Length: 95
Image (cartoon, rainbow, N blue to C red; front, top):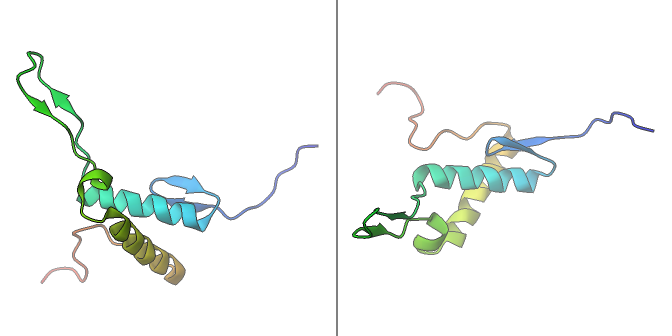
C-alpha cells in the first residue's frame, strides 16, 4: 500500500536533502564556489594556448580546513534559524 508521510527536509546549496549534514555540506560548497569559482580547462583550436582550469579543492592551501570551518558556520546559522548572508554582503544597510 502506498501512503504519504511527513518528513523533515533540509535545503542547502539549491537542493533538498534528508539530513542536516548533507544540506550543510552542500551549502558550504556553494559558498566556497561563490568565493572561488571553478574555471574549466581550455585549449585553443590551434593548440597554442592551454589553461589547465581551476578547482578550489585542488588549488587552495588546506581546502579541507576551509571546508570544515565553513560547514561549522553554516551549521551554527542553521541552529539559530537564520540564513547565511551572501559572501560580500554588507549587513546593516548603508554606511
